Amino acid sequence: MTDGLASIEDFHALDIRVGRVLRVEPNMRARVPAYIVDVDLGDDLGVRTSSAQITEAYTPESLEGRLVLALVNIPPRRVAGVRSEVLVLGVYSEKGDGPVVLIGPDEHDRVRPGDRVG
Image (cartoon, rainbow, N blue to C red; front, top):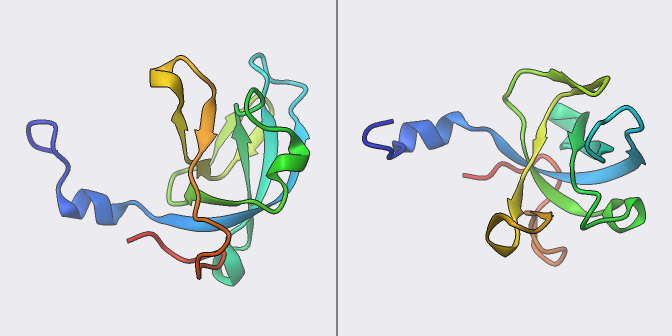
């Protein structure tokens, strides 16, 4: 990065994929309320797990089946007892004061789990 600007090479180094949320359960070990989320990232990547602090905006039922975007080429990390393998992408709503709102393609778009953002 130069002067706070990312190069196109920086962007291409990020592997962001479409995923479909398969399963969501509360993470009872988290200090800040969070879900354990299993995301189907297609045949090549399979199902990966994420820990997501999105309980203010979503119920487990509202997440299951939803398309999301996930950063997949980051090292796994342990979050409140969960091996978090991907980062599900979201935006802080209300100028940072509101809950995190997930980013994902519309259901009617022609994308499938595993498709790469680019």
